[in-house]
Image (tube, rainbow, N blue to C red; front, side, top):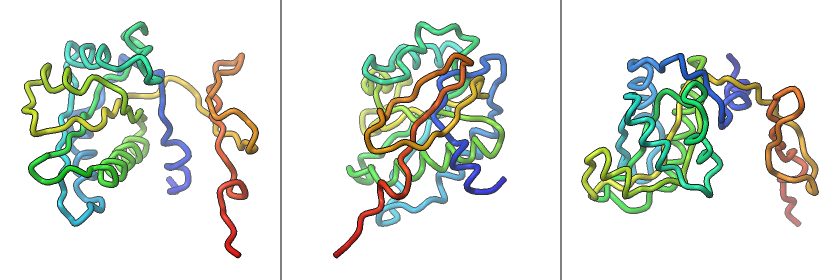
Length: 192
């Protein structure tokens, strides 16, 4: 698969085939990919918790906050939910600025999942304290992101947008989710 295809297919999916599990070896492989990406000062402060147990995935879905676009999963049938998650933590013993590291690592995980025929969603709006409590994770590990993984059960199409178009995705009459993206002409700045 061409890299461009990986990037354009590596979307945030909201509907999954809940009957298809993400293999444990793939989850380990995705975490391994994240170990190889650049890290600020090479501190490598990120830690990961794969979650595949159905009771734990259901608990995690219930911790997604209403302002997040994936909070609706708690009302969605299990047959359409992701079957695995990777929770990303920042090790506070190794630093406190995880922004660059977490974004790069999350994208690597999503691209790796896409390359393996799966898909995912990167989620930043969730109950962090609830995650640590439920999974028994010490507070020196700060939950940063939840990455949902599974076999996508929806068609997503990228559409070019103009500066005045709304940025939100929409689902058309055929069930295709359309995601508007800015074109290079709208994001490239010109110097004097």
